[in-house]
Length: 275
Ligand SMILES: NC(=O)c1ccc[n+]([C@@H]2O[C@H](COP(=O)([O-])OP(=O)(O)OC[C@H]3O[C@@H](n4cnc5c(N)ncnc54)[C@H](OP(=O)(O)O)[C@@H]3O)[C@@H](O)[C@H]2O)c1
Image 1 (cartoon, rainbow, N blue to C red):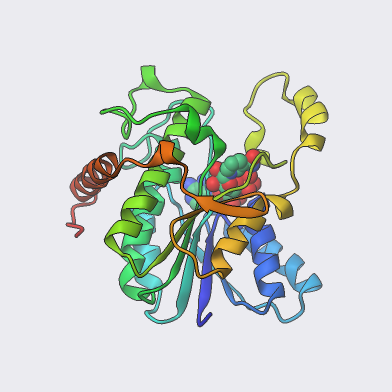
Image 2 (cartoon, helix red, strand yellow):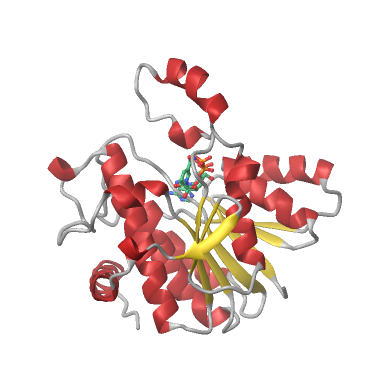
């Protein structure tokens, strides 16, 4: 692989595990993070275990289309080999971003959507793009208003699942429009991370009982790492294997509609036209 792998959410449980594993293989990484102090501390920690690890750090707030654009503009063409859209969040309550988008959708879907599209001209034609989805996708469908849920439609897990379902749809349409790319999906399973603290009073108890049963971040991110290294296309990586995209997710009409809606929405908000 020639160039860096961009890892978004590289300060998180699985993101930092990915940075350590990739640099341990001698692959240079660009940590794309909203908290630079946290990123510096993680880089220092990784350097203790992986001497010589080649880690660049740049600011990226996926909840801000302007930040996504600034990040993408700062990437020099030819320096990046792959993109791992790993960052994610489960917002505890309904909150709009500076762009007027619901926060969970902004971070898990709109940000990665725009980031990927803006980076494409700077990536190799056959670049690897790995998008982190979730088993929650299987429990939801995307309605007409799904991309901009109203407050009364918001629920922590439901909105998160729909945002991940939209990311899945985007991945399939991306693969259709750019068939030379290696676009794959990674599903980590249930992983002991800060993300699965949903902010309820009983979480300390749930954590104590439940977290030991979850996968470690290293195990959770391993499907994504395999997807980044294999010459596959449109596969669903989960556990120790990859499989065809499950048939319940195959809906090219939906994928195209969601793509067009997203493009129009982002173009209107950000004031520029995307192809
Ligand atoms: N944990 C699970 O069981 C599970 C299951 C299925 C899928 N996933 C997915 O796996 C991915 C990694 O999750 P994780 O468990 O490692 O969670 P995590 O430890 O909470 O890490 C999430 C990462 O996303 C970053 N992030 C959040 N909001 C952001 C924003 N506005 N801009 C840029 N970065 C932002 C966080 O940055 P900060 O460090 O600054 O907060 C952090 O680096 C996510 O996409 C998640 O949805 C997780």
